[in-house]
Image (cartoon, rainbow, N blue to C red; front, side):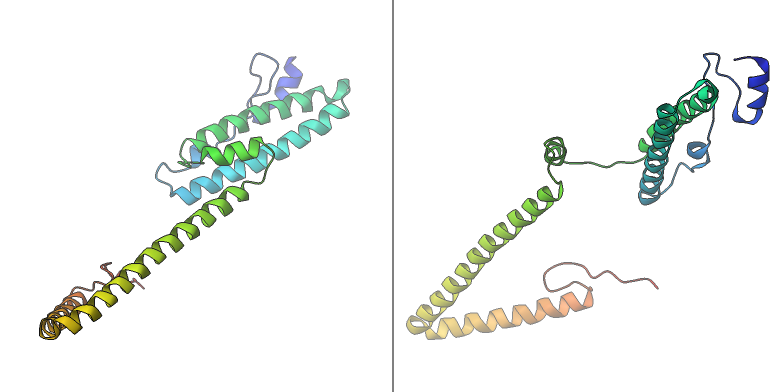
Length: 191
């Protein structure tokens, strides 16, 4: 690259010494180190979209290449390298864990939504099994109480009174401590 070409590039950062134009973008430098994860992810997504745009521009430049388009080709190559570097720096701030099953599905040319569907179906099946067990225990408890009531009516009546008073005490305590009946703590919404 001669001096006239390098001076015409003036504001883009000059020559890198290897014939590539050093186009510096400071997207990663301008980002604050304590950004929230959603903002970090959006920055990576924007960088990916910018990289795809640069690849398209590079494709157009290469497909219609002639001697006059060498400088734009070098500029676009350098822009691509810079944006890939920027993307790598931005991606270090993102902590996204993708299950290997999803990557394997993508490698096999399948839709990754299949993984999500399969996981949900497995959860539904396990939930139904657990609900069946819970219902079976409720039925057993009811049956045992009926049998015990026929054999020991006074003891079952005192048991029910003890259970009712314990349940009332538990409910009163839960309300005073903002604890839900299932044991979870209520979260107060801030306006």
